[in-house]
Length: 248
Image (tube, rainbow, N blue to C red):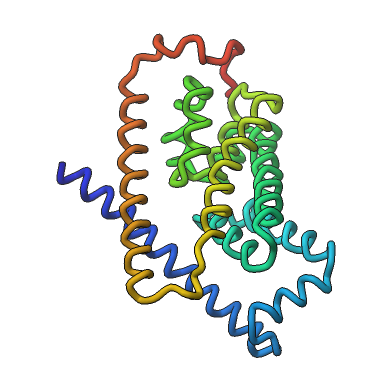
């Protein structure tokens, strides 16, 4: 019990550290715009509106590049959702982030397919491969959608690892798009319903407490589900296993 609490506490502290890091980054970005004459969000939106389709393209390039090259930075999708909501309408934000996430995931998957385990291991490290590869090779159709749905798995590393399995593009593309879009839609459309500008100190306190409880619940459920899947004999999942031989 104590070990489980310690594990959850460590994960929660990591999440807090991530949010603090992004808060600092957001402050620096705001300072950059402020010093260049864009002193309000409306000014920045005006810049985006004037850019037209180029704004979509620039945003997409930045997100895809950041996700593929700087994948070791966690919670990037959440950060880009927040940025997209600040710059675009909720529907535009959802479409942009969802499509860009699929493209980035497809590139990571292709790295595994084209370059194999040696290159993937150099990119993501042996520890990640040891932790997730067997699960993806033996119970991929069970584990992969779950890993994409829950927000605390290393999605980018897992999509790259999935490329080492017999998983096909025909399966990977729709499953990845649907599962990742569920989380993105939840963040986008739920987040857009809050009027943060009118929040009082009490509102922020209640909001943070609720988010903290939800994070703990997700961690708890993910941990229980992972332990259940690990303890279940592979024979129970035989109908889910890939029919082709495992890729080395």
